[in-house]
Length: 167
Image 1 (cartoon, helix red, strand yellow):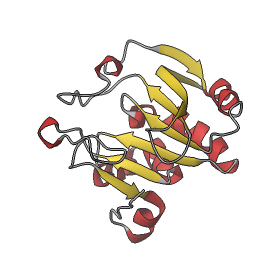
Image 2 (cartoon, rainbow, N blue to C red):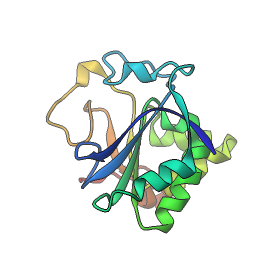
Image 3 (cartoon, helix red, strand yellow):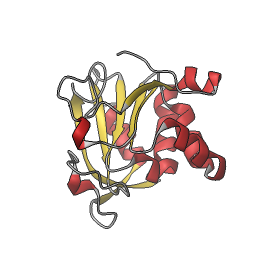
Image 4 (tube, rainbow, N blue to C red):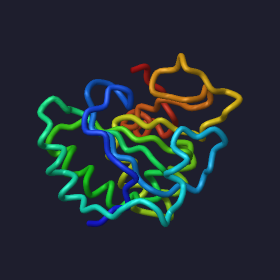
């Protein structure tokens, strides 16, 4: 399946716990002031890539045990990311995603957009919420602003409410 990419980082140490393969998708509707990746906002930019080729590329890095979806807005490309995520989870990878939408907003979107629900259900951790420049902090782990939460997705789905995690 095709996906619109802004780029990849094969061995990242800053986009989640451990050594991770980070996928930056192209396109974001949020346009947060002070965004770290403003070049990923334009839905018409980036390049098309095949999720099978990305999967094969990830497998080439034996020290990578986690994959992070970043952007752009990953949930704007939920279907191809879910397809990729299913293969990665079957191989035991830890899966994490950033989103400008909150966990609660994604739950609501998932009621009308099954691919959003499918992707959310594959995640181990979600960093949710828009980046807010006034709440920016360089001291936060894996987040840019204080309003963003690190969500334990399986536990949150089981409880029906956002449950945070400290990584």
